[in-house]
Amino acid sequence: MNVIAIVEGDGEVKALPTLLRRFPEWRGCAWADLPQPIRVRRDRFLNNDDEFRKQVTLAGYKCGEAGWILILLDADDDCPVTMADSILRRAQTIVPGHRISVVIATREYEAWFIAAASSLDGQRGFSLPAHVPDAESVRAAKEWISSCMPHGHKYHEVHDQAAFSSQVNLDLAYANSRSFRKLVSEWDKQMAVAG
Image (cartoon, rainbow, N blue to C red):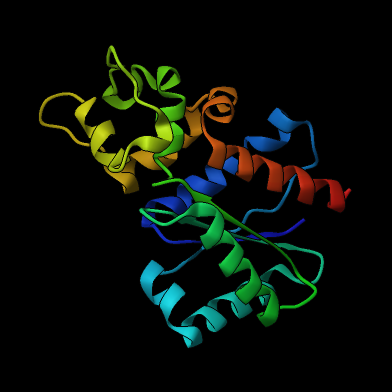
């Protein structure tokens, strides 16, 4: 199945396919084609109807009738459930008949790393602190990760996000992050349909 993702960050362009390529073995399902995601600017994508229509139409064209459109955005301070429902309704009117999922990472994509922080200890200089907060309560996940890096270094999504996505323990992320469970649930549902 062809999976066309729409993401908001430069880091997610590489990180999300890196993460999803690990799912078939982990979930025991068929492989999927994961071309480079479509990168959007969050505010423009959400608040400009023409831009939203353009990007969702492009995703529909790229994935074809048998493919899957996966929209992944950060919630920041918005309610993930309300935001996802609204985006899904809008997208369905633009490309009716296409399979579409909307996953909103609570706060940020990096919250999934916090959810499985122990599995990243020693990776790219990350040092596990004595206390790890609830992953989805951290408002500035990138900054929290930076605080666990060696002095003079900081987390940089373009350089570190894909590397962490290749190493993060998926079971821990699943256990400790509701929004990561939503991503996995959507993956499982779409792969089951694909057969």
